Length: 558
Image (spheres, rainbow, N blue to C red):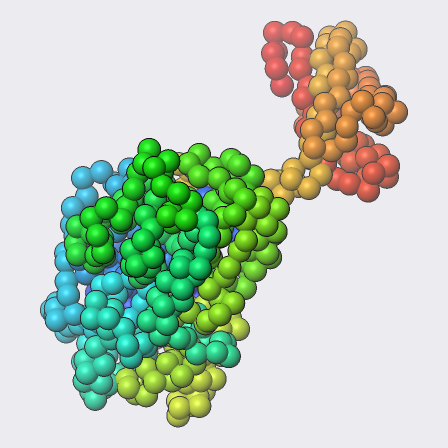
């Protein structure tokens, strides 16, 4: 009997940032290594990644990182992971190429080349463990699920998946392989919960392709298709629809061009004609009704890019009268307000807007019937819903119970929970360090809750600065106080407030200079407290207060 532990380091009780650890005796298998895009209150943060502390502490035990597909919620954190941990990376051909792009674009681990390309037939043998794979359907080719075969049964991780009976060969699920795995002993299933609450089943991607052709055919001007850069299926549909309606496609942004070039090189994206793609210089040769603009935005996020287009700030293409903006992504719940705001901006700029979600439920994730089918095919003893916020994990747990798994065998984990199997029983046995690591520019983890709180305060109430030059030997103020306000009040319209603030600072400074037990920290703290009370009384706002006290002596600036 093996000692088995399953530890989610991300991807549970949240959207994105998928990373799951499976320990079998002394070996550690890392499943996916994804990032998450920041929520609106994370001001200035570029991306969020998992906390790798536990893996860094046990890096000599890591057998490898196994990737399910090439989206950034599965591969985006890899550059930061490899910066401190040298471990082999396994994935399908397209997944590995996109992972390489992610690593190379950050520049964090130049020269890393420990990549291993697998396919659905591969079997990788370790001591007491065999890692197998099975093809799944997602919005990107080369998507796979992972099976970790142990002496006590298989640990299955589905990755992102859905079932589509009419999927093309490049996207087809290997039902026979899944059923074969399910005919054996499946100890635990970790399954995608992203659409566990959906009331509507996904339509076939053939229907989506037909809808896109119809939309382009009926449009009288340019069509700006908004999609996620790594949604290869949607990009393929855009190329095919453009070709059938005799339009040309312009790709905006270097990242989209990189992904398209990579997919074409590997044969995962097929151009319907050699001249379907045009360059920026060639745009003027075509009428508006002959063009499709494929817009994915920075980091694959199209919504912010559409906002820049609507305000005429996009560096390549801007919205003009007669444009149709076709949003082909299904926004998450937390993005609905942003999408509504963006649509309003696009209409004001002269465009009309159509969303694919207005017509169909079209997602790369399994809806309830598909989720229950996956559980029935694999017949796991224990079930662990992953990839989703808590309500989605809970909904998926209910679905598992509906098909016969008792609630006592279902675990809804938090980040860092250790789910351990020993003595023929699975239970939560402890916790390891886990949480969010914030990336801001080249800074990794140097932004914490205090800095975010200060940024939030600055964004809401601004900053109030008091500058004073003093002489302790003469016990007097040499210059100031000078008051500077940014984002708090308009100074020219608040002369009384500024003047009274100067008087308060003067009194505090003078009182401290006359105190025999003068302390710099006490002086600054009293200025903050005095100004804070006064400003809140007058404005009911609390700006960040920054006292700058300088001493004109050999002691220099304090």
